[in-house]
Length: 262
Ligand SMILES: Nc1ncnc2c1ncn2[C@@H]1O[C@H](COP(=O)(O)OP(=O)(O)OP(=O)(O)O)[C@@H](O)[C@H]1O
Ligand SMILES: [Mg+2]
Image: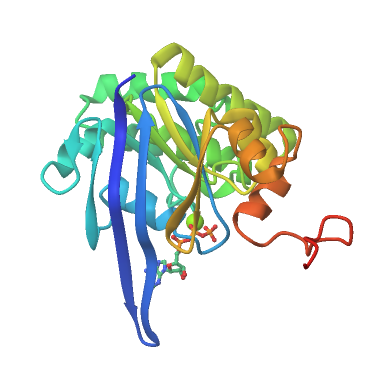
């Protein structure tokens, strides 16, 4: 299947008072159309910085990438048309209602008023927000707010949806709903989903393929089973142990697993 996201040598350094921070040093990856990709890595590994570059919010310091055939450097508008982005922390205005937020977003995509109202209602139905349409966004619970963030990112029916820790802070029921939604988007609309998570059970259950970054570099890329086999010791390894082995933050070897010095 065709690659819908392709990045080569993507890099970004931030200048800070205490010196340069190489947030992303070299990210190479390919995501196929309709794939659910789990983008994993420890805190500070460079996941959000990569997502911000792939969604045109941040200029890469090096490398190149295309999203839905549009080049980040020469067709940022094309990339934005093709992508929806749910940031790690949502930025909704607490004083306006859910309905106003959804309609305003649709208007930003230049839908005429009547269509924007219609689209807002449709998104609210899809995300289970209909009962909350007249509530102020500042009064939403964490899970409800997350659903609103996702509804807003889906306004223009993007081909690619970038989700940065979409289920952090959600209760188990809301998390299961979100997994269903992600699968439905892929199955019914062919949406490609690029998501970061620190919940490895979630990555295991949801992602077709995993890319692990550490210190700004891709350190593993494969299906959950392939990574377990290659790094966790067996196909029955937990993704947690596999992840810890990949990122070198695993438990110290025990007496029976420690390599014998000869
Ligand atoms: N605007 C910025 N200015 C300076 N440093 C930054 C900036 N944004 C990110 N960084 C640094 O770049 C590194 C990567 O950050 P990033 O947010 O991409 O990590 P992450 O993988 O998303 O981590 P987390 O799992 O905690 O969300 C970190 O060391 C972070 O402090
Ligand atoms: Mg992050």
